Length: 315
Image (cartoon, rainbow, N blue to C red; front, side, top):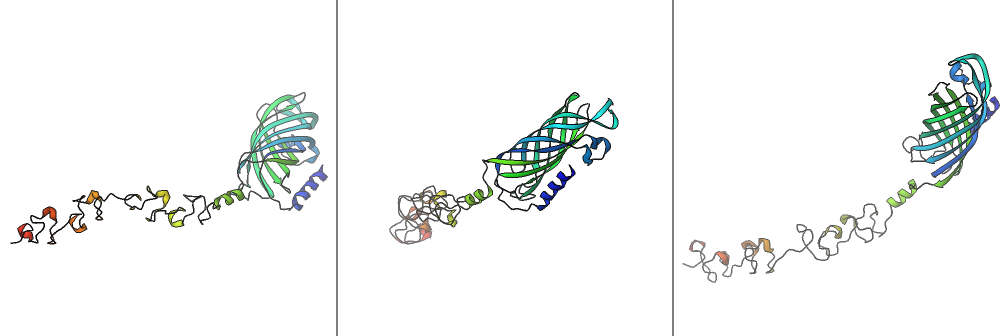
């Protein structure tokens, strides 16, 4: 058993192959595990003589950048304490019993883009969850696992998984540790977009106007950055996306629409005191026919130049 662990440790240290880490929705793993009931009892956690190899299979599901879900099943032999009356045991005396262990765990991954890069070849994680085990001829028990793991991904479809767990017993039984090494096959691409696709979408420019689609208010009509990627069809200084009358020249105050000016004197009707007579802006849109500086509307003699003191009439 010692040689196996030395070999695996050497494999871990020597592996430095870089690979693209494209996400997958699903993973299935097959490997070996070692279960130890003696460690929590004696506080000697790495007494390899008390380890017993077993088989392990699991199915993993990608949730998001930070979390994976895993259903795990371990089966095989384990050295189980010899009990006089629980929790009393016979010191250093263990019996070889059949163990079945099933659990559901959630993993928090450190290669989530915040701590390490998502495409990291060597990716650590922590995990917890809930599970139960059956020790043949003894009992059925539940537990909560706490542990560390490491995923080494030399290829897009392949992962080497190393995991250690402390399983806290919830019933009248014993805590135990479990260490496992597995080969994992990754399959099924995730629905979420990769970083490369997000970046490509962010800088796509459908109308080739130099404004990315992400901020282009008219992504399929070439415009300018001054008008948020939109054209100004009527040349009134307001882009089409914000112009209520994009094909008629208007004013900014009127949201791009032309203002009503019935007499065509340049004074809009809402401000024109004589909306039906062409006049002058100085006289609020009214005419001054005799040119005496008094608008006809207030001139008693509109066709004869006069004095303001005489109501626009001559003396």
